Amino acid sequence: MSGEKVTVPLRINRIAEQFPAHTVTDIMLGVGPKLVAIPQNVKTIPFLRKVFPGVNDLPELFRSGGKVNMEELLKLRPDVVSTIDGGATLTPFQQAGLPALNMDFDTFDQLVPSIELAGKVYGGEAATRAKAYGEYVNAKLAMVKSRLASLPDTEKPTVVHVASYPPLVVDGGKSLIDGWIKLGGGTDSASGVKGTHVTVTMEQLLQWNPDVLVVETPGGDQGLAANTARSVISEFEKAPGWKSLKAVQTNRVYLNPQGLYPWDRFGPEEALQIQWIAKMLHPDLFKDVDIRAETRSFYQKFFDYQVTDADLDQILQVGSR
Image 1 (cartoon, rainbow, N blue to C red):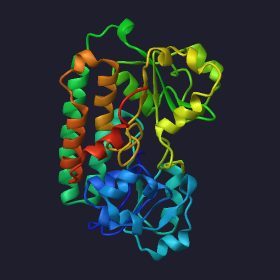
Image 2 (image 1 turned 90 degrees about the horizontal axis):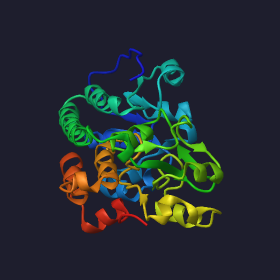
Image 3 (image 1 turned 180 degrees about the vertical axis):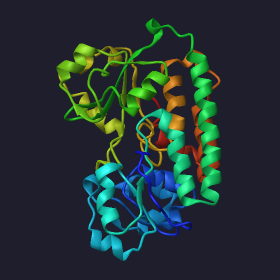
Image 4 (image 1 turned 135 degrees about the horizontal axis):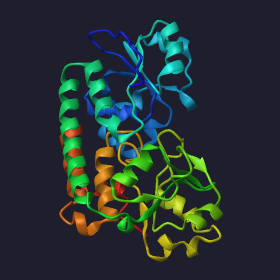
């Protein structure tokens, strides 16, 4: 995805995964059983363990920031290493004689190409699954965009996405999060703060005073998966100024869903995220979009998993506060 050219074996039977969110792509493409190493904390996400119980037996060889003991990795004889990023990140693997490439994405435009690249690398059924996923995403994107096409800027609620608290960590402009806020018909109040996981003050949030707060469940790559969005809010409510926030006063604080990974970050569940945020921000324009039904269908189609009502309650965190 970053432009480097890499030669990989025609048959991929052993995969080492450095990037937490991409583990979900591996599972979706049917190559979960080929994983021989995964990142730290991925197996702490409850729904991922349910969908792919085999994750419990995999060594967490990649630690915080993607660090790895190369000697241990070489013992596992991976056919390919899926990395966090391109460029210098690939070098240690290449020097060790391991084919490595990054298949992640930073924007919505890169989502489908990244999944299709993974399908191409893994080959066989994975390529077929990747194509079907791409068709699904493109159809849902077209639906969301068409319904919001004539929406004036004055009718786009201001939004701030909260990654964690305390401290207060948000996601800003030129990020994937900024992308889905805008795709869903919102205005990103934090767009002036560039990048993901940026620490800001409560005074800054009060100055933005957004119409909507979207609160994430930390986990997957942060070692906090035992938390929930509700636990983040429970701490947040103690902050001076919380009650004076417009989003709090109007009951528009939403708990971002988390499935195999937080929907809002770098995984194939972004296909559901754009539908969820569009419905949250503009319920009148998406009355016919049943998020529970869509979620049930998505996991059945792309993960061969039949979700229960209890699963759905856990994933969707049952709405807003």
